[in-house]
Image (cartoon, rainbow, N blue to C red; front, side, top):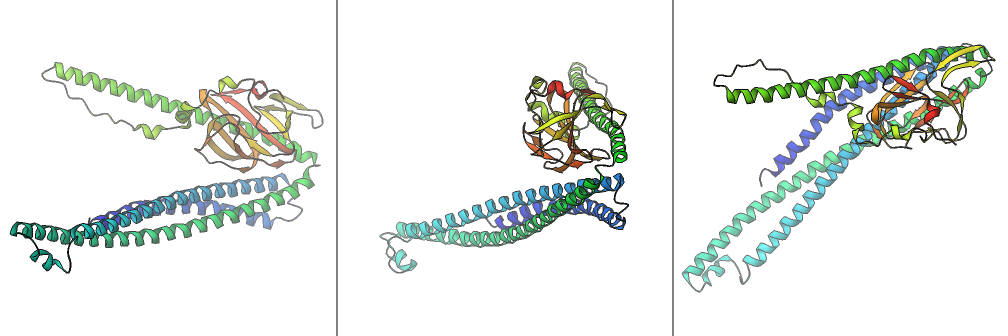
Length: 426
């Protein structure tokens, strides 16, 4: 029992110390994001009103919004971790309180059972015995009770100290959670303000045909970047599968070697082969194995927005007004009313990135090697590695020079699909 307090202390330190290291690393990452946001803010402030009327300025606002979103997402994750830590500490305090109640009840029961019939004190209890044998037995029980009483008192004291320590850690965690929540709310207000500033400039630039032409040209480059992102995700999955096959082969050879060694008197020693742990190769594709089939949704796939119409189709698109031809790997949906963006299927967030021309881009990985791409997002509601359900809100469409346009793509491995073939008819 004497070790209870030590166990509690070691348990708390085993939680706190790794957290402190993780917090330090996370703070460095957040400081890097904040520094880039501040740098962009200085650039935007130094630009004259005339210079602000440019596509470059819009892109800087878009990049800044992406970084603020990233900062908010990190703060949300940290707040969630703190919340889980607080719940764990509260459960531990509750357990300690129940243990204290149990000890006190036991103590009271000992008193009632061992002192039953004692009129004044222990001596009178012993002298009042009817025989020497009964006196010896009473003496034995009294000594046993005394020893147990001392142990219980020590245990109670350790329990109280453990409660005090746990309460202090709990209060510290609550304060840190409050700081995180306040920082997150502050950044959310900052993001809202930046979106308003960007909207004002967009309103002035929407009639500029030259800028719109440049914006369409930048989308050509953005498509290549998205294709590159998809290729990297596919290559990562292929590398994992190759590694998995290699490990299986190594395991098979080991089993064969064991069998041969049993048959041979003098087995030939083999050089050890480094086996890479499975955990090092966990990818979104591993997680999707338990998901429902994505390929079965062809022709009845839910739309990524509630209200919208396709304004730029899959493949080559010619703009007669601007006299331009663009190759679209997906479709562009003009959104009206509700700007919420929904996951079209059960999946996991594979990537969140910023690409000039499409702004904040999110990629989901689904079962059967399928991926969906969502571009032109202003706000993102999910984090990388997070599982999402079909119809879950994952973000909001941002405003561009052409209006509120969601860029949407579907890929199967390295091959892009025509989303209109997949989407359900409205």
